[in-house]
Length: 417
Ligand SMILES: Cc1ncc(COP(=O)(O)O)c(C=O)c1O
Image (cartoon, rainbow, N blue to C red; front, side):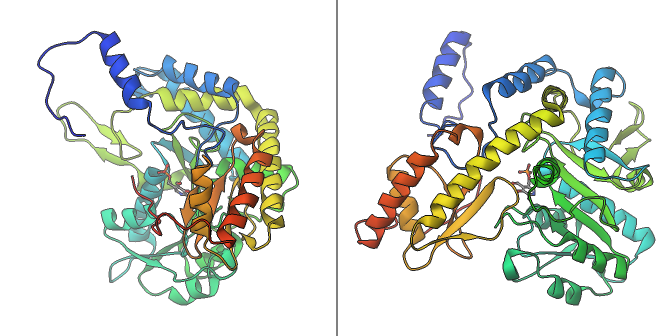
């Protein structure tokens, strides 16, 4: 229902609050145990830390973190340095905070474009080569920055098509990238092979670690077979890393990391001829709350490496139990070798969307995906006690689908906001 009328009279907070509670009632609880859509819940204690820190800095404007609020400036230095160290960055690397993965990607592409104007000038429209699975934020960046995005058509073996990417390099190519891991399929791209193409042609190499930047270093320490993906790979010039995903900060914080501080000159926008003074920012937004940065700093200090290992280990075990159970069901098949905490499964000889419909009727909320038609499960700590219940219902629903007792409610797959 639309109600765009500006209220002519004031109301009490109690009235406003009760209206909001009523409106909120029909929303899906974001970390309900039966919600297997993307959510980042790793314990009530962690949530309280993130929220308390967020509330402490909610009203501070982080655009003044270098002047009025030095504590925020220090938090920014600290979270950047912590992540650079975790991601094998060399001496002299740098980074800055942005409002989310999309903004980090747009700024990485902008930095690459400015760098290329000096280091790899093109006669035509500059091009960036991305795998089939790259996040649409790269297309958004291309659109906003006047670049052509050359997206590969396939993901052989569920990873980037390295041969096709190499073949796509031309005189106008300035940048190439891979994801660690991408949202689709969840398996990390062959970053070393993509970086080799970048080195051979003098291109900017970006790694989209929005999902994996925080989680993969710890998964590796837990013994998971994570391929090389970070600044340890020669040629990687920038990374996007979301702290509001597996860093467990509140929404609104990601990092743009650069392998050399000198590259920041290509990232910053500075404007001097303004009556209010010099205006210089690293990213797109101007005013923004200090809350997300404060929550990231608090959570990273609260958990430490020990805490991240503990929560990733527990969630990795939930994912393993779910994947093993899915694989035991005749006709279901896991896609790829997922490195983070989300995975996809498809059906060999029946309609997987009918399975999704049947599971939804039993109260399980999951995400549909395509190429191939599949269901994505995104694991978090709230699922710990639900694995057996989910698998029991899945077995029953698959039997019903095979027997023709359930059909897909719709065949659409939509990913919009
Ligand atoms: C691999 C990857 N990159 C980038 C993004 C964009 O992040 P955001 O939604 O924070 O803008 C996402 C979001 O899911 C993602 O999965």
